Image 1 (cartoon, rainbow, N blue to C red):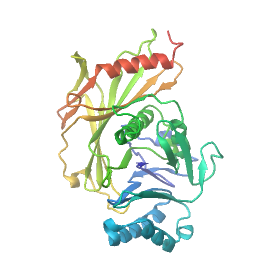
Image 2: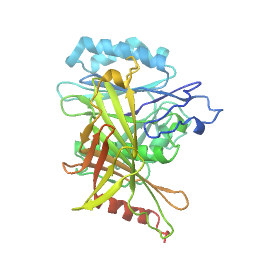
Image 3: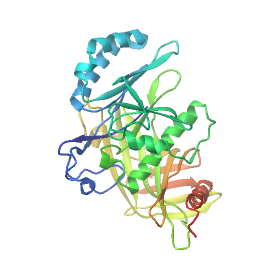
Image 4: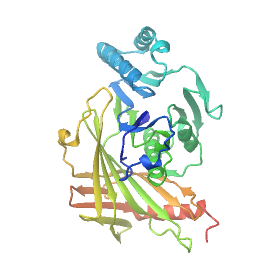
Amino acid sequence: MVGDILWSSKFGKENLVLPTNIYPINQFIPNEQSLKPDSFNQKIYLINSRVCVCFSGDEIEILKFLKEIKLRCRIYGDEIDAIHLKEFLDEYKLEEQFIKSSLIIFWMNKQGKGGMFNFPKNIHEFGENKNMSGWFHLRSDVFGEVYASGSGRNTYLDLLNQKIDFKSSHEAGDIWNAIQTNVGQIARLLALEKITALTFQQNWGGGFETIFYNGREFQKFDEITYIISHGQFDETGDIGLPNPRLILYYKYYGERLLITAIEILHASKEKVDKKITFNSNPGEFVVNFFVVSGIDEENISVDQLNPNFSFECHTMAMGYGIISKTNSTYNPGYFVEHPELGVTYIHNKSVQLVLSEEISNDVSTGSRGAFPNIK
């Protein structure tokens, strides 16, 4: 389950800055647009260890439902089953109280059996009239069965339906392949958001959370770093070494997500033993922090979390935005977990990023394949 964090309102928020960009995005939002980006809050929720839910739509409707389902699931605890959820949903009368919104619920019982419930109940196949509301379904060779709803639904499914260049260290069919594939797709989306206005102009994006079932319980994917790199063909048809432009570190403090966003302005580079090391010192990077709470939680400042801002992370999803001379985009994604690769950040002092030279070469080769007419 993947959910973005950007919420919208009629007037939006002046000078809203995204984790992916250090400039206000208002200038890219048409004045006549009925809804505008407003704030960051969660859209996917762990109700308990065996139930999770994803929302899109109206905040008031979602908030009311969220409180009620949390209360009901607290009563049943780990014993919750399909019959309990059906009983609750029948009593709640979604047709009357969930008019402007969509939701999807996944559940697993103690016997390892689970299921899905969606509202609205009708699911449209991708490729039908895109103006219809509710859920759309796509069957993908890479992502399997995909269901999507909300303002980014059509664009998200369009991107998943394209030929995707993604590398995972696990075989297809393995649960970690599925996790890495989805996390790698998030890196691709973040790269597109960094170099285009594709997501937030449609009132979605900003960042993405992931929930998966680990065989015992549902959990959110934690302590991961997204590396967003940029490259552009020069006059000779070479992209050189794609430069890391943005580092996003995701860590949860209780239910709240803290995103540490490090914009790289300049970095020295060194190649040793098939690894490329990038180093940035004070004045060569900009750091911002974003606290993403549930809509049923009070929004708090980063100072109230009292985190240790420094971090070291060896789990990385990398997204690339390679721009051709005609402004077409090559957008591969990678997932890497390796003790010798990763990010070390010492707060306000230094940033060190160690990447595989093999991946950089692979991106360069793939770029030439994507744009074979470039000489």
